[in-house]
Length: 203
Length: 203
DNA sequence: GCGCTTAATTTGACACTGTCAAGATAAACA
DNA sequence: TGTTTATCTTGACAGTGTCAAATTAAGCGC
Image 1 (cartoon, rainbow over the protein chains, first blue to last red):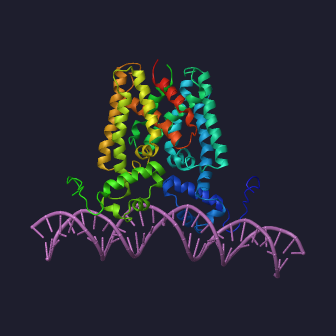
Image 2: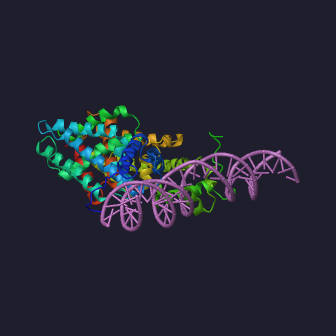
Image 3: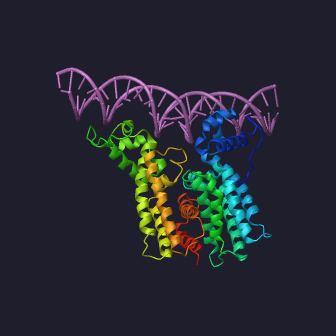
């Protein structure tokens, strides 16, 4: 039951409640954030009862898993498109990655929080499907940064894995400090990105 | 009433409920995390009714503010003691800071989450007292890093503020990636710290 | 169209949360 | 003593996610 048998998209009472739930929940999260997502309000929005959701998702975290998985697919594509153009010099690729990363996070703050926050991973709620999408996302980043190293201008002695972790931590940290309101001033962001760029590039 | 008049520590019914609440809540948070802190359970632990707390704290967030404020005081002291010993070369100071920062966060993960997470700042729940403790904490870090720059071995062209933000983001990002369970393997942490060190130091 | 099976959905209930309004208690003070 | 004031409790409300059991409706063989 858990492995193959398609998704039974045939229209019963509602039509396609699973899809409707996903879309409505994504909208709600983008608008009000994770903490603003209530299953009861969600059901009311769509016009079904509070517990109708439980026939399409195991529980609330299964719904969040599905939304996060969609996010990772989009995120991976965005990342590679900004930082992996081998026609450009490494410096420009790194720059594209940093600004692309930060910009994406700012455009989808709540989705970013869901994907890279504690709500799913810390509690051990990630299901197989999510892992299957999220792990390649990191691998893609690792591969990209390895190619940067081969292109020079970036510390090529460092272990690619470590370097990836640290570069990721740097952009992730900037995003989080701002997103979580610890550093309120968003106007500093571009200058911070440039500063990070200079730090990572070995001139 | 709201400004001056001391804390009225005299023993009424309970003795010093405010202090007892603070201590019990800190313990609970260290044990079960922020989400594991329930005002009702807390009251039950101490042996008072659910709403007794409201005569010592405006609401739950006021209690969290007080705990976070204590944390910032301890944190600032720790940071300076690890990274501001002018008898040591800059490289060792930076190294001390990075490892001290990460180590402190690992020893007090839940407190770190409260102080540098979204629970207080993002929602605009920080009160004046907390701001008065948290802001100098950042200033202390800024001052320290400025002294590093004057000591050489660190990019002295960069704006100290930007550099502070980026270095902070780097360690914060490493901590968060691990703490939030996005990067599960804590055994990589030391190597990541060393990698970050090499990135920041201009050899 | 009839009847059976099965998927989809609903209603009711439970335990839990933070917080407000009123009332009770006891300490402090005149 | 009586009054005031700080402290604490009881009752209630509006939320939350989720389980169990009852209900509805669709699909399918006949």
